[in-house]
Image 1 (cartoon, one colour):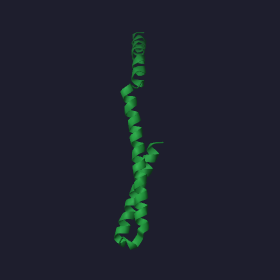
Image 2 (tube, one colour):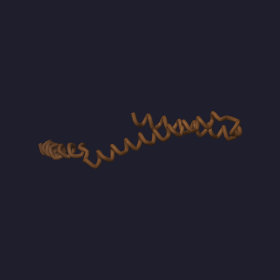
Image 3 (spheres, helix red, strand yellow):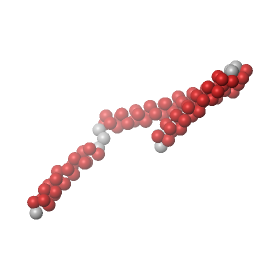
Image 4 (cartoon, rainbow, N blue to C red):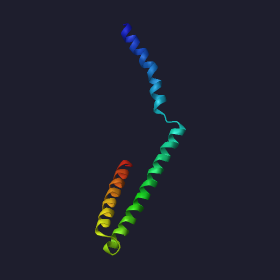
Length: 91
């Protein structure tokens, strides 16, 4: 009997605690919104970087050596991978 009474009291005391912790404060909501906007800004910046790298690669061997083109293509692939990670994290 004592054991069930203690469990009942504990349940009654902890039920409001779950409700309190589940609510977000105004500051937490603002931080969350800023993080989302910051992520979108990063995605836009990285998309521009991909475009610039593609433009540089299109110039080809007229402007760059084979080694430089290889580095640009590697950088492009790394940037695309990062963009994919950010986009999938945002979903």
